[in-house]
Image (cartoon, rainbow, N blue to C red; front, side):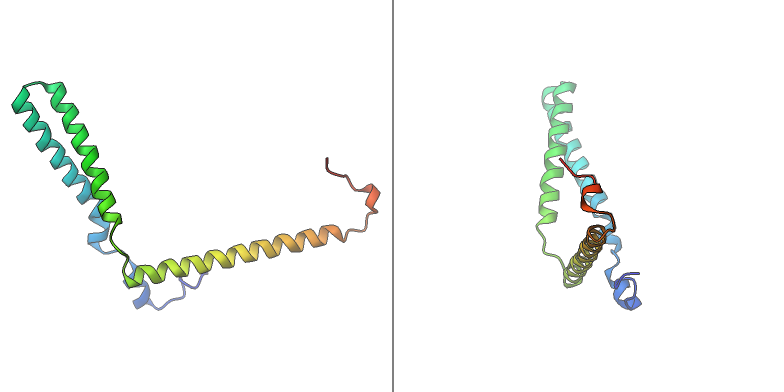
Length: 124
């Protein structure tokens, strides 16, 4: 059990994503689809060529999706998000330290073996 699991419920509930946070990807997709359809219809009405309209729709969709995702990433995290990121970093460092300590302990046990040195296989 980690320190994050032992936190007070009011703290862990505040770290849960809100409905707005959960639906942000769907919102970005919806806006991108809408923009792509709009551009596709404008090109279709102007040129009356379905292939050109489909290409314009695809380009507008992908371009708008990438740009809106980049703009969404540009926002600064809230204080709760920053705290959560720091806690995850500390937990990762602790796990790495425990793993390296276990590895060092097992290597020390291997080097203290009872077999003579010449009986051990050697690496190339």
